[in-house]
Length: 418
Image 1 (tube, rainbow, N blue to C red):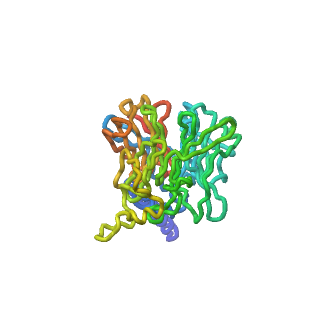
Image 2 (cartoon, rainbow, N blue to C red; image 1 turned 90 degrees about the vertical axis):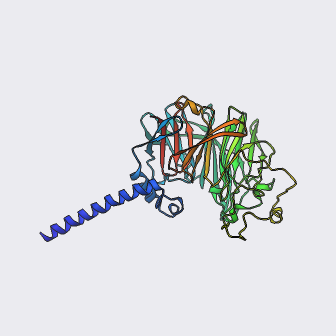
Image 3 (cartoon, rainbow, N blue to C red; image 1 turned 180 degrees about the vertical axis):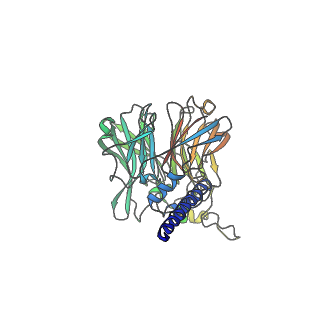
């Protein structure tokens, strides 16, 4: 009898602890506290983070924006390594979306059935990290921007082109390496490598960050060095069966987003600053965007004390290539404090007609989407924050006009009107 009572009490206590932990996790999810804050999450095993997110996913969530009440539908990616750091989503056709994770695993997500089907023989084990994937509008080519190891403690950023095939669960064929950076050693950080690829007119454009370790706010010579691939927007042109590349703009820190505005027929980037100073930039050929010579942020070591250095002196900055006799291109807008800007896009669709021709800027740190209404190509007239409460890695506007978001929490979120 005693043994039976002990067993029942043990089961009861375990059940109470389980319920308490779920309640704790749900509250922590809302507050973005432990274990959902990004700092500690980096040190937890993937499967712990995955199930913490999965068990606390709301069935749906209703938000009120300036023009609409919107519904967020959470869809868990069925893979424990889907917790973020890189990757991308692209619409293949009206029913299917390509979901590519940071480790190269790729799924076909069926929009009607809300199911995932894993593609075979894609990017697994080919790359250290997937920075971005883009499918061309004619759906014949797919471009992969990624980081590779070249020797111990050294890495490169590369761009590969594949032919797109979606039959029999095979995605790719005919791999061509069409661009690569020089190598960078001392264990460079792929998350500081920037990383978007777009097609604009007849050319391919790639954004790269300073790529190095996050030391001294990322103040290195690469962004101002015209002979370096890092901290740049690179233009890649095709001539017959070969490709050539050139530096399109310099002085970038960590451009995580790159997109085209059809309204203005221009390229824009969204860029991480240091402590403050995330930027929306209008990308113009030949311009210098100033990093690290000028910034709207502060050094990570800045501490509000009297003698604390907000930014390095011009004398020290000249040593790493800053030429203050030249003009630097200012951002269209700068966020302080930092929002952790990720991708951007220009909205066009039937689901949210009041959003048409507005920019949408996603964010990691601020866990939000910012709706940006432009008066001219370089002037903002209105900015609205839509608080999603998830770190957003990438998003797309579907052919239906609904918005599909890929988060660092291993989820897709489908955003629609209520």
